[in-house]
Image 1 (tube, one colour):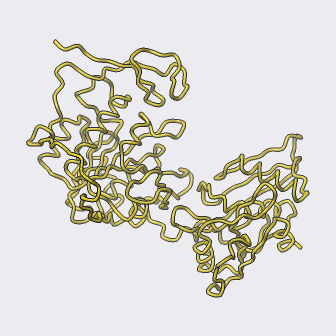
Image 2 (cartoon, helix red, strand yellow):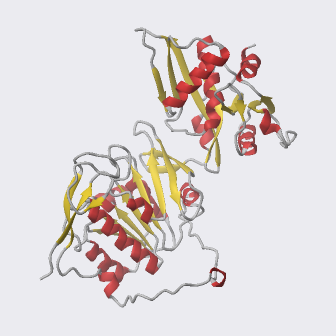
Image 3 (cartoon, helix red, strand yellow):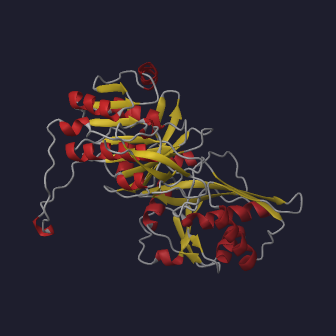
Length: 458
């Protein structure tokens, strides 16, 4: 009789060891190793592999002899999702979607299953009953398609049996942490179970050219639960972000083998489900009846998508002697660096001031092109002088106070021009080769932050 094989896995990063270790050599976490059975005696192959599926022997082929044809991408009838996926859904691709509990992952995937036309979709749920899914479907659409099939099952062997009978064109799994394979004798959600279930679905997708969506849980640190190899195995990794207290949700592409990474899709969560936001600049800019200090508009870029966002700053006297530094939607360390530049290069004494920074709309921005807008908002609040709502900024600020050029400035200027802005501050280096006559707004090139403040505040 064959012996049962077991190994020790790090529950934080998925590192495998033949013996128990106190400290993980991969992620340096302590006391995270647990023993898991990785192979039961007499384990059989998956059901979908035994039904006439034969493995072919691959041979090396010269790259010039490989026939290449452009992938025909399937539209999901969701412009935001198509944009993040790189133009549509590719046959045989495996897409992993992660996000916090209650953010709307299941709603997004159920909308996909109900709205896609001409394709048979199988929605596999290991978390909800058929009645719960039906109730949500009635809420988010008034005319659910008959090509969407619901399967409440957690065993991969039973799932593949139903797939063999139904032969769906698209599969959605909610969620990968609830599935378990008979090949692994450990609890669902463990490192070995998540890896084995994903590997079985990945082999099925590649051999049958069936797209598969996997919904994944995340840990308290914000990373997708399970081994890190899970993100390497799949073709696309999407992150569904947002604050549950705000209506807006952001679908961000972290990895994409069939399109550009760092793409962005924006949705608004309503009682009737998720609604696409085609023009995010209009929702991220507040409609003000009067001019207020501490507000500046930045022209940012997420993937290939230009957006204008509102940066808000509040500078006040420190109440208890120790100044506070707080940023929402922006890196606090970079904000501290910008404050140091203001003190050193411009002479503003902010060491005894509380500084609070907020990116309107509840989104998180990492584009360095919003540096100049953040500094303008801070000085506007410090001096209590408003900046016109018809002025925007698109430039990075260096440690010596110089205004650095940013990429794809034409798209940023065109977006600001389309929204009716009258003036934009950019780096002088961005003006080289730029045709300014085709824009209605005034394009002002600057070299140092002192030039910006003299033009804004006199």
